[in-house]
Image 1 (cartoon, each protein chain N blue to C red):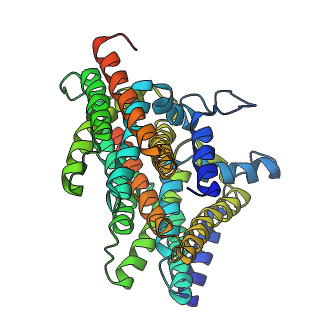
Image 2: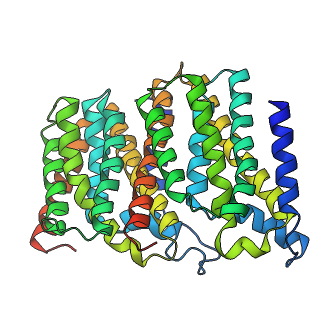
Length: 199
Length: 197
């Protein structure tokens, strides 16, 4: 795990630093956060990933986070090399993970962790394509990763707290399922929009 | 009903009826999350049906109280997909008005159906509500954020309906809830006949 993370970090580091600095540091930091907040596909997949991780034990949750961010780090160089549009894959993954959480039907843990890795891999190309491509700097990527972590961790904490108190109030136990179904619904709409040719 | 529950119901109702105080209502939000969020809330035909789904779900109890708010937005998303793709469907506005009438009557008579039957009824109407939202989606500045907004807005309306059902715990609460069902039904007639818009 450590070796793969380190290899991914070195690979990313070698790819990220080549881009020119168009903005001041503060603007770069703000841009990093905006890349997460203004991208509904990323927000949705990050939220459902955090929700999914909240069902796991502490050890598995840490591995889940590591799988996701390893995927993100691996995704950056893939984007620079091939520039693949993976928005549809990101939305499909959101639907799958959201549906699993809504129905409470989970495949084996290793499959889910693979899904999280793939989800992370989809996040990176989404933000770096298009208009932000030439403005990508280390600060932007750094704050993008931090904001992404905060969104996933926020979803994880909220759902974990809900899970803890759901023994006292039964209705709390259905809140994550309802939220997951909303994520699925939003993903269906966005995907249909993309496929219809309007996007 | 205990005071905290009444207080919760009142807070939910107030939240559902409140409009956001926007300090910066610039182009960032236009056609984005706020537009999507307020779209179902500003259309009274949507409000009536979606609140009715919450109230009826609460009437039916477990598991409908939470399955209906899951089924409605999910099927609504498929309806929105039809709307985005401009697939022709039966008169949308008529079906939306009809949803108010049917759901209002189900509340008035406190009709208890199996969860599958309830999900089918709610799902059929959800397609038309979604279709109406979906047709406006291509005009949004940020369609993705708009979509998230209107799904969340719909969910809040269901929650408002479920929260309002807590009123059933107080004296004459059941009559109050059924009266609201009657109001929703009448509003549906109003939308259908064009008296309300």
